[in-house]
Each structure stands twice: as structure tokens, then as C-alpha cells.
Length: 400
Image (tube, rainbow, N blue to C red):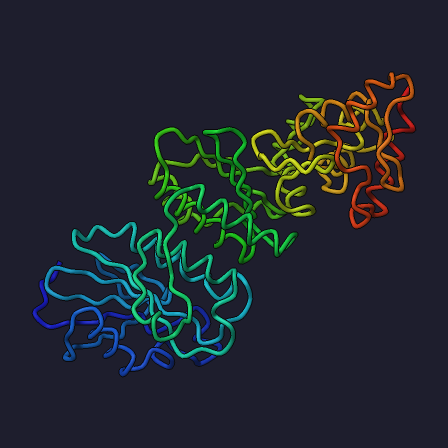
């Protein structure tokens, strides 16, 4: 490491698409911006800037374009990593997709004295949606210091203080955006945390950020697992993200590609595949029993409408078709343990119009009990899609 008496920014000038767009890092991160950054970090105005090409490398930079929208500020024996916002605050994930990359570079840095910062450029768009605030809180939790948030944002950025804090915030946010999330966090037991994350497109960046924050806040009692929900391209999380999660040592990563799903399908009549659970989250949002409104996640389960055991018996279906039916979110509902058992035994029956009925041979006392614990006599009409009703018809056409 070079000991520098004068602050010096070393910056890769090329962005990923600079060759085609003609837009370079210094077009938005101007000398005036760097001056503001230097003063905010070091209380100094005098500094040097070195813009370097893609082939430049040192102990802190790889020979590539500017990943993470980063500037590295060296001063004495300190190395300061500064990531800059996009000038255009666009989609949910795209506007912060450089953040995990910046964090990965910082986390894997061998510098003994290192700091991580984030700087808001002048931007177009809304930088304070519920989703953006959630991401800023994750960033603050894993060590990002915001240099000018007080000038650019109306809301204070508060780090998460526990895993439960993240789960609760995510649950509230997901409730407002059901079906619009790429990552879901589930507490399946008092000490087991499951993360279901899409690993393709811009979705992978959200999954990585949530895993980083959960790892930072993890305590000994928790066992955490990330289920990578892949598309047909079988893309896992980016290598650098996986390396950081593995280095943190708090989360086990399990890929859920089609091959593994098929193996599980072949071996089990009661399929609880990560893809099925993810699809239920994607369709219904947070775990809540649809027959009694119980919201205790540890006892809420994904129940199949058309049972997996019945699907497997269909000789006229290919294995891919069977798996598609078995993991379809439309072929499932959230039920508490009690109602799941009652539904599986066909003691409780769901009609195609959403009405809840009970098996004909039950006594009046038994029906009275069921009515007491089944506080929702009709399934929400919004859930009664054509496919949902189709699965109900298949279920009851096969009941002896």
C-alpha cells in the first residue's frame, strides 16, 4: 500500500457501456462532486484525481470497467470506497443494482483501514419510495455511510437492529406490493430463517443485499438458508455475491434448479419445494391462514389444492407437466397446521364459488367446533381465478 500525504482519488473512467453510449464516470461525478466528497470524509479540499483505464490494476482494483459506480479515495493509510447513485432513479431494482457490487469490492478488500460511503448525485425520479427506503436501511445496516442523505432525502435512514426488524419491515412492504417482490423471508421455526430469492435479472441484487444484512445481524441460534429460485437459464447469484455470503458464513445457499425439483418430486408425495413456496408468496404475499387469519409464520404452511400424490399418478402427463402443476402458486393456499390437516383429510371442503363446507358425515357438535375455528366462511373472490377453480375441480373429481 502506498502511503499518501495528499488525498488521491483513483477512478476507473469507463462504465460498462461507455464504449457505446459515450458516457463516462466523470460526466456525472464531476470535480465539484469529488471536492464535496473529499471534504465530507476528510475535511480537506486539496486532492488529486487519477482516472485510469480498464487494464489498470492494483491491490484494490481489478483490470475491468468501473464496477459498483466506485471512486476509491486514498489518504495516508486509509482506503475509502465511495459508491455514487444513478442520475436517473428508475426501476425498483435497477437504480441500486451497483450497490451490492460496490459492497463486494469493499468487503473483500485487504485494506486494514477501510470505510464505505454512498453519495447521492442530483437525480431525476423518486428516490424515497418504500422500496428505496428499505434498500437504504439495508445499506446502512451493512456499513454504508451516507455522505449527503440529509441534503437529498426527506427521511432519516435508520439501520435495522435485528433479523426480526428486517422481516417485519419486509412483511409491511410486501403487503403493499403483493406479487411484486423478488425476495421473500420466512421464519419457519423459532430459529430457522428461509430466504427465497430470484437470482436472475436485476432481482439478484435485492436477494444479495438482504442476505448481507441478515448475515450482519445473525445471532448464534439462527440457521439461515437461501433458496436460489432460478429461471430456465439456471443462473445462480453472481459469483462475487456468493463468495461474500459464503465468507460471512451465516447462510447456506441451496440452488433450486429444475433438476433438483424433479428429484424432490420423484422422491416425495408431499412436495414442499422452495419454488412452490416462492410462488405462494408471489401470489398471496405474507403467510396468513385463509380460513382463520392466523398470521404466526411458524405454523402457516403451503397446502396443495390438487395433491402432489394425485398429480404423480397421471400417466398422461410428462414429468415437466407434473412438476409445473405441483409448483404452481395457483395450486396452493396458505393454511395453518390445523386447517391444513382438515383440508388434506377433506373434512373441510372448498367449493368453486369460494364457500367453505364440511364433510357430510360429521356430527353437529363437530361442525359447530369447525365453525368456531374457521372464522372465514368464504375464500376471497379475488383468489378464485380460473386456474384456482380448475385445481379445485381436479381435487374433488378424484376424491373417492
